[in-house]
Image (cartoon, rainbow, N blue to C red; front, side, top):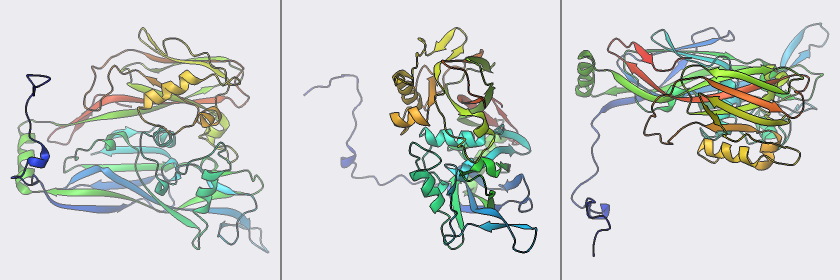
Amino acid sequence: MFKLDPDSREILADSLDLFNGKPTLEVFQKTSTVEYPAFSAHGTWPMNFRINSGNTYLDLSSLELMTKFRITKYYPEKGTDAFKHVPLYKDEPPKTPVSLINGFGSTFIKDLQVSFNDTVMFRSNGLYAYNAYFRQRLGLTPKEETNGYFEDGLEHMSGPGFDARRSLFENDDATFETICPLDLDFLHQKKLLLNQTIVDVTITPHNSAFVLLTADKSTEYHYHMVACKLYVKQITLLPTIDLKIQDKLNKSAIAKYAFNRNIMRSCFIPAGHTDFSTILFSDCIPNRIFAGLVDAKAFNGSMDMSPFEFSPFNLESIRVFWNDNATPFSPYNLNWSKKKFGRAYKDLLDATGTNHGISVQKYLKNSCIYGFDLQQSHSDQISEIQTFGTTMISLNFKTPVPENGLQLIVFAEFDCFLSMDKTRTFTTTISY
């Protein structure tokens, strides 16, 4: 016998490691999941939460939002001119079905802001619903039914997903409780946040016109949040371990957190246009970009239209330019009537790096999202050298943009680095 590589190191098979047990982890003294209700008055917006870590370290990857929803119709009281909100109980279903948008446990949120020690760390710029939806639709985070996510068919206003979400409220209480992680970029890294850090979370919800779906224009429907709470793991370290960390910080060491920064953009494309170009970023070049088009009326909220129906709208070409480069290098020549969109579909699959679960039929109908991979390597274990310049997107349509206009939704991802010193002051390499 001989080695294929003479310089390779020799190892022993795990099955023959007979004289060692499992390694012992001597770090944690206590772990508890703590509940935080909103400290703002119920029914007032935005909702504010404050997490004061004290001497514990926060596992923000475990941060979850629990929300209890109810759907009501605005109904006249008999014998009076007054109106009241009447819950949709299972024994009184509406003649025309009403449901919620997909993944409503997180997509009901319009804006999310997170601060560390009174300094803003994350801001969704009013596009949190699209940030959460893109992540789930593209398979970047798990699709969870406990988040109200049920796969739609070829129609968003009816079909299996619509019916599944509606049926959640067909119970004696006419409510449904969702629980889901907050889709915040920093929360996807696994390191514990230093103790003595105050985390403020501010949530602004969308209105009913955005969150509810129904073809019934004669009845006024609303959704309500009956309860809303945050849950997070707080960890007490062994005193010796905590002392070592504090000692290093006091000697000017810096806690370092690497993560993927997500920045959302939206651009209005007026009716009648056949081409559109805009600058997305003028500093760092993103690693990858996802983009899609929705009807502007649905984007602004209309119960008879899904805000997540990304249609082709007779787009002929879409390209991203940065410095002297372009992706795709050779322009698409899309032709939707002839089902000529294979390159765009394959590029989306390559950009996600996973099975996004969008069938060819859904891509043609309501899940037409474009992926642009600008990375040189594809590893979560390394960061690429940061490139600076201008990132621009350009679109060309075969026919004029329809009368409502279109909203271009852009999800961009960057390598980012957050550092925190002994005073719990932090800096990031990319801000919003």
